[in-house]
Amino acid sequence: MASQERISQRFQSIKHVIIVLSGKGGVGKSSVSAQLALNLYASSPTVRVGILDVDLTGPSIPRMLGLDGHPVYQSSDGWVPVFSDGPEARLSCMSVGFLLKKRGDSVVWRGPKKNGMIRQFLSDVKWGELDYLVIDTPPGTSDEHLSLIEHLAPAQSKLSAVIVTTPQAVALNDVIKCLSFARTANLPILGLIENMSGYVCPCCGEVSNVFSTGGGEAMAHREGLTFLGSLPVDTELVTLLDASPPEAHAALDDHGEVSLFPLMHRYKSTPSSKLFQGILEKALTSFPNNQAGV
Image (cartoon, rainbow, N blue to C red; front, side):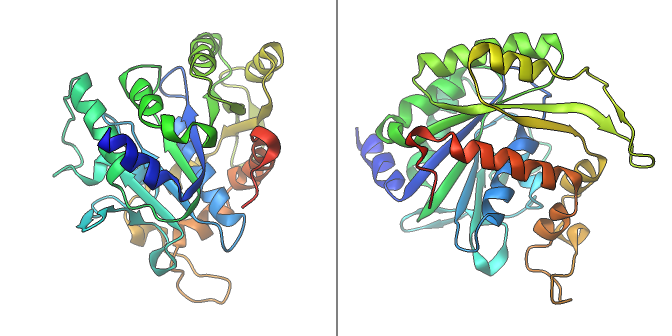
């Protein structure tokens, strides 16, 4: 009961919680979570965003945000998240990846240990005031998802989900299970994103449908979901999110000075960034009672 009360207190200062789900692994869910957080951050100079990585056995958000190797500090009021944007402190991140001694260390935990870790993330991280908390989950509908929904019961009215798939039939079949889970848990669904929908050649711009295309949109219409949009395989984005060390992201800001958040400046120049802006606009208008404003 004490942990539930603490979670309730933590989430009083968080306006919206967006859980990113996928029925199958390898569909690019974590890259979508990272882009969602980056685009929310860029939507207003006052928006405060957090991203929580509960993919306990395969945490990838720290690397994607260029935060590999950063320590997590304990304060008198709980864990202090790692900030991606330096002293501006508007994009915070927490992941089990920060707690591992080595990035290659495996996390071999049974269900109760996973449950305890998720409960601790929700109750002990000092997020402060947030407009949005994006939660990146592992694929499927297993221990982590059940624990997450159970512990977030005090913040049920703030929860919503985005579902990620690729166009091929095997991924779409697993999305149906993910959709069933969300509906069973009374989790409002903002919409569905079809990722890896074609490959844009960086040389000639020709689009090749490597995994076919349109399957996610057709399923969204069939299931009564909002289709948020399609994202092709973007080699610029892949290179950016793979370049973990901050110096690899070095960029100049609009005034020609070294940026305090170089990843954001690099990301804005990718094709995915422009496409995701449209996806975000649709997602925000799909919030329950359309209360996405901050």
